[in-house]
Length: 197
Image (cartoon, rainbow, N blue to C red; front, side, top):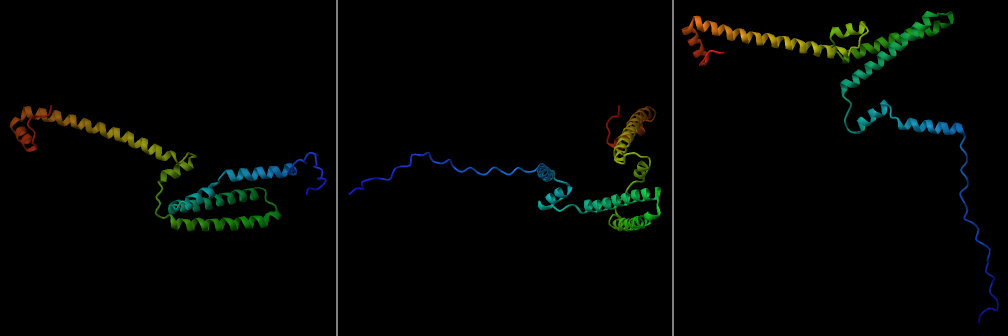
């Protein structure tokens, strides 16, 4: 049969579901570090772009790679020269070790540049480009000015050709008046029926 009494039903409200513990507050310094690291990831540098070119299956052109090596060695050499100038301008006996080190770096840098010269022996650079650099001008303007000079020369030559064509036409007309028979033979040889007007 049925039991005489049933257990009393708990009428108290159910406890609220457990909430996730509040996240620990990150110190401002660590937040800055995270933000800085995130920004560094968002901005791809030159090295990442090169990696993208290699992952796409297209190798970096050998010539561009040679120029990159030369540019890197030249930048290091110029920086060592700059630092050497600073040391020499205010030389102290305690700076002798640093001076000797910079001199060794310069000698090594010249050797590295000389090695790059063997890889770029087939590159021809116009002497005018070095004159632009000596004058403090942008060497990239050399190509632009060369094109402008070529266009001006082209117009000049075209004018001379047009003048010579007009002179030829007038000369044939005058010769036809003085030597009609000879000029008729000339035109027949040339396959011209009528003298040019």
